[in-house]
Image (tube, rainbow, N blue to C red; front, side, top):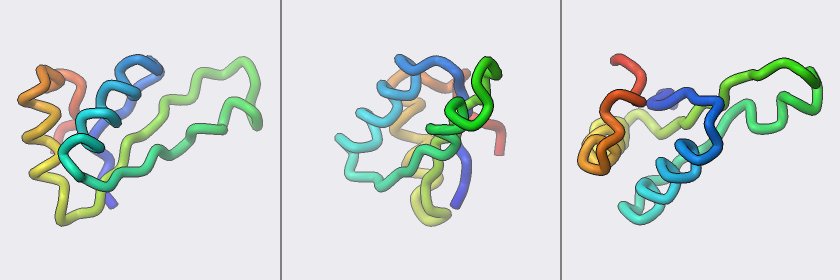
Length: 73
């Protein structure tokens, strides 16, 4: 799996997930419940896709105007 986006902003994460879902690209959010284990610490959430879908996911998120939010390859 590849991390394509890391953020603390729930709106950014929800938007990216909606874009990938609409495009039919499977994805997974890691570290979603880490705040339960470490309250008071802002742990960024990571948006993951399978290796084969990385370029398609980056393309779709780029078309949606999220280029600056994407992790560097």
